[in-house]
Length: 290
Image 1 (cartoon, rainbow, N blue to C red):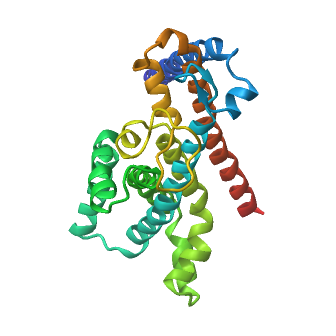
Image 2 (cartoon, rainbow, N blue to C red):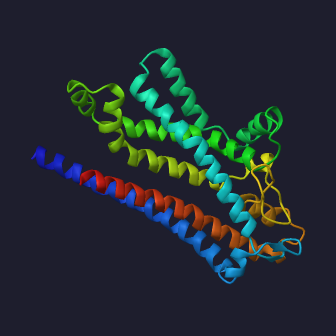
């Protein structure tokens, strides 16, 4: 009798627990649905081919957002070039080569803390380092490197967690057969860890693509006559463009549909980056199984 009551209690706890989790999921999906519906409904008539391929005109009240798309893509590419190799290399060293001493623990704690630093702090640091100390000026390169610094802790953490998920027996078996440590990592560890490493990295890049504060100080401009011609030119970017159109424009009511259109395009860009992470992870896992 007691065992029956105990089993019944556990069953009720399970039902209540799963019910609470489903309720949380439905609340989140409901909030996201309201946000997406509001943005799509107010920007649907704005998204045209001209909107995506033309430059802004008449004080941003007319034209398109092509320079902002190009600027966002450029700084995201620079962010990836800077943060991905460096972050993955650091993760491999910390997980595979570094010991378990106090210094290693301190480095890991510092990396975790850097992940929580507000983005505006990275923006101020980018001004001090890249704009002033290295004399790059306010440009695409300074903004991309600043976003790279901001993304670096995320890349290291995600890559290290993916490496930790690979069983130790994979390494030990390779070393027992006479392989060097690097050969063991390259052939037995990285093929299984790369999907998780790339997924976390792309999610970090997607977050960087939507940041405003770091690029606000390091090179983003509200209005430019054309597309940037080099990495040392100022640029327009969708997050900063959206911020100005929503809060600082002299005719906010007139340009509000353009702001909603910019928001929708930015969401689609971030969504495509996240989707690419999912597709890439699926193909890598499938090829590994084959």
